[in-house]
Length: 176
Image (cartoon, rainbow, N blue to C red; front, top):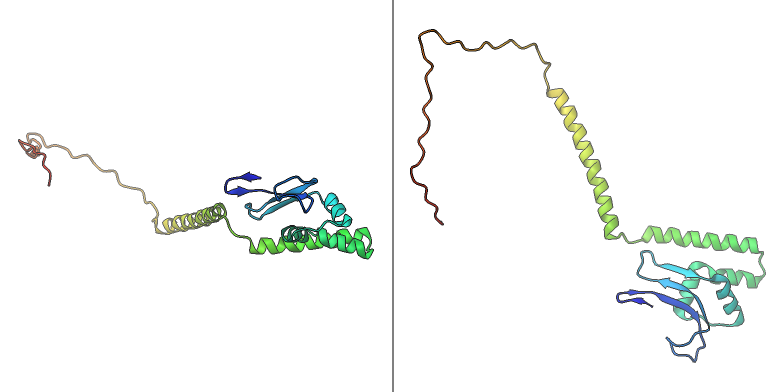
């Protein structure tokens, strides 16, 4: 199942003599190994039924069922423990597994980018606040300024004109 470079595994009840990708009796769930963390969708009631009837899970399926607490629930049922205690034990098992997964989860590139963006915006905001404080300290009080008087021309005297720089007569474009 799935597609190229993105597998999805089906958990099925099948006859042991049937080929691996051949005919199966019942579809029991899906396993998505490429997702981070990997995701498993199970029909637990049907899985318990098949395990009670005598179906033998493969090593991979046994591992998946163990992670989800299905095998723990079945074991406690066989011991004759009350259903409320079983659900509490299975929930505690799932919570413990989830806490371990969160603690050891890989950070994806998107998570790293998001974290770097948050750190960068916090640093920019801090630097901006520091600059504003620095400017406030450096700015002297503004005193009333004296009016500048316009330069008056004395009668009879002309203002000197500035000479314009000479432009080159010829422009040459070359490669160097």
